[in-house]
Length: 84
Image (cartoon, rainbow, N blue to C red):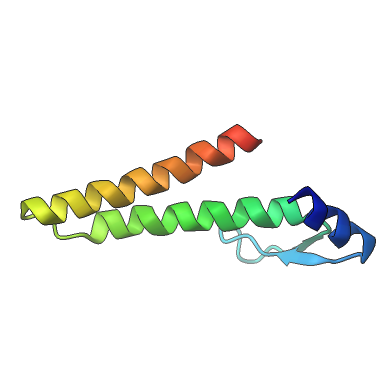
């Protein structure tokens, strides 16, 4: 990832971010591929959490699937904390 970030800084790659918590706020533009990577991981973890909450938990197989989704989402959050 360091090589990608270094290359992004060399070419002055601007990445725009819009917050979902304040929709009227204008987007912020950064030149940080690391922030983009963290955003992607956060969204992926959120997706797995959503999949876990939507799983059919009325039978054993559904519970296993839900737990698996929650574990993956949690693991992604732990990974994000470890690299920060």
